[in-house]
Length: 301
Image (cartoon, rainbow, N blue to C red):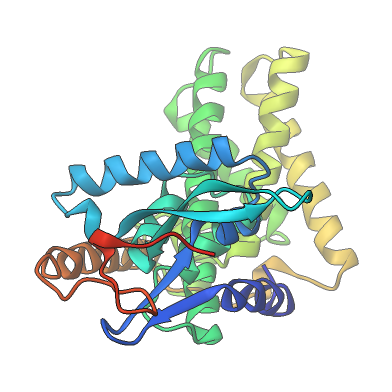
């Protein structure tokens, strides 16, 4: 997600934030948040909120500290009014809703980072989005390589053969540089996977080539190391050619931070945040602008 798009989405989310200055808490109304998370029907979003509430309760955190059901009056267009259900949601509640949804949706991917940081500064949101995008890209590559390993094993190739196939693919993608040469180039230890230190773009490129190989191995029922190696090399050359058309040489891109450290950082951030929520169980309750507590929240007009 590029900086301009992050800025556009962030502006939409910032417009619907509310603040309870008495309790020093930011909150969002569910019906205002719903379209920003890609939902069109309240019934579906209500289910997503209930899933988040279950997650909150499972974590041992008091649900009422973060989710408050309220009602509001809406005009029916004929002078009549009708009560509808809504929720007041803390930042943590919004985070849980996003975490229990599909991160492949752009709105959800953004929301997971937007609500995860305690400040709405764009650079921090961008940093977390980039971090998550890289860890997710690495996860997709692991899955596609696992599938390739299974495919070639079923077609008479052993583990050593899989290593040779993957290395030949790397050599094609990196302009003739072998996996070991790229490790030396990027300062990666011999016992660590090269992909753990590649930037997101290169990880995605390797994944695309591997997925193409998987598809053709299955579709054409390729057999044996020689045939599968040829297929994998050709797919990596094709991906390299596509990058080259945009002036990108994968072997010249700088290394990125160790993916294992990033994954530990994400887990640590989430654990620390949950710990903070557990310590907030006895905090002053969120209040509406007219001074009423969560527990005796009035109808909204």
